[in-house]
Image 1 (tube, rainbow, N blue to C red):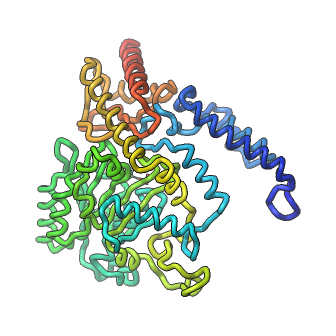
Image 2 (cartoon, rainbow, N blue to C red; image 1 turned 180 degrees about the vertical axis):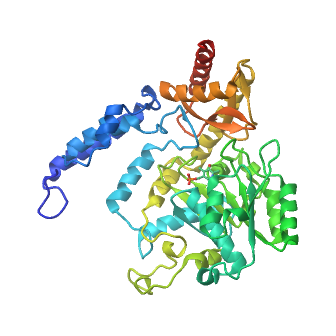
Image 3 (cartoon, helix red, strand yellow; image 1 turned 90 degrees about the vertical axis):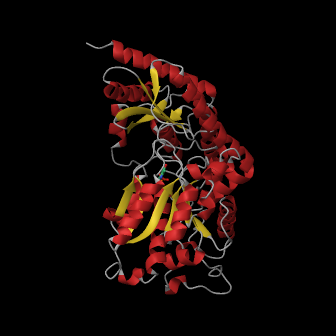
Length: 479
Ligand SMILES: *Cc1c(COP(=O)(O)O)cnc(C)c1O
């Protein structure tokens, strides 16, 4: 237990606390500096699991820190490591880490009120607005992640078609709404329909072409046939950087269709939208500026530590109508702490919220847009390098086109699905590299998502060598 000054929770001995705090900072910097010599991931030993499942115990700060170093830090997922390539996880940065510490020290509540931290969030919002070519009437805010941002986009689309009256009356007298996305879209799109009361049955999952992009003709047909059946199409969700293969839907064509049909055009750009930072990639996102709302994460390609998602809405009025609620204790005044409307609580589901903007503001300011764009472009170059190596290696087969930074491939052999599933698990357990797996057209794929700014060509070579080694062992050890 920490010895405190009376009933306060502050330390009695600030000098000792300061020394301990500095040790904690140094340990995290050592960890980050030495990432490459650690395994990417290792399973928790059974006895550790047992220890961690015991009830909380009182301890000193130094002991809690020692526990962290021995029992927690070595057994995390490993996404800061250069050879973590599973799912789409950001690597984080030391700048983001120390900024997060400053935010925690300030303990700001970003629900609203008249304070500089709110202005920092707005500054980032304006930066986002300019990046995506949105007008000054746009509004936006930090959220946990793209899952939440997709929900907010869906709720704004619901206000757009039914007016804010839906907030009082629900969907009872509403027309039957329908929404559209590709059949490779992220699960949070269906979840948004579910939670907004419209229901997942209203979501039409449109087929994709051979590049895994939404088939815009099939989309148009689905909209026409729903209209003929008396339904009201209200939302199209396009994807920039699909979960499985990183595909980018044809934003110009979808924008034109939505404008013609007066349907809300939302983009799930969870990791892909920040490709706008790389001049060589940005043209491929042409049409993003025509969206009604964009959901994306700073915590993936933006390298900001978790969590830092963002929602941007073209029409700030619709955004506010969707969430603002009168409440006596949230009343605004022209002066004092309750000035500075609109507040974040007028634009989303949370009242109390942390200062996610600070670590993002530090990341954007200290590294700069150009450097972050280069990191993003470099991960795509590494994906192309991996693709080329796969193409010249007879044991390996590419399973999907490489649009951005995700490469899906497999080790060729009998019983390929079983072997490749096992191969991915073996790779993860080896601690050498950690891709994840997915299934494409019935084939189990090794899926390498290159997101981390620390990943180099050498890491790709290490991954390839390990795939070949384990593939060979798994296929030659048959009974
Ligand atoms: C990661 C991801 C999401 C979900 O984002 P979270 O930040 O995890 O909530 C949604 N869509 C796509 C395409 C993603 O890659």
